[in-house]
Image (tube, one colour):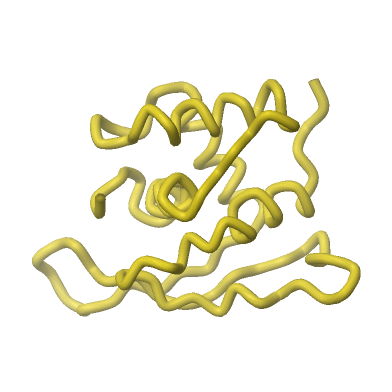
Amino acid sequence: MKSPTPQESYDHIMGASPDYWSWWNLDSNVGGLDGAPDDWIVKGTIENPYEDSPAELPVQLGHVEIVRAIRKIAAKKAGKYVSASAQKSCSDFIFRREEADFDAGTADEVLQVAVLGEVVYG
């Protein structure tokens, strides 16, 4: 089993448009004609789902944070609100990358786990 490359993590997750959802405000356009650089970083904010301030939380994610969240979901350690489809996509990404099928919803769950530690928005 080969470790995922930064390009694979960017393509599978950011390529699925997880920032479609209103709680995200991300600058995810880090790729060029040759794809995303190995040290890609996505910055922005997510609405704060908790009752403390501020209204938005800062986001700074790269390959390491995305893969860490994918592994956490695949290991079923990301809380009770992770969908079965996100669980399957993450497991596929780890073990059968060519079969991983992230959409905006499942990629959003990966980002939520990366930033918040769990899925809060559904």
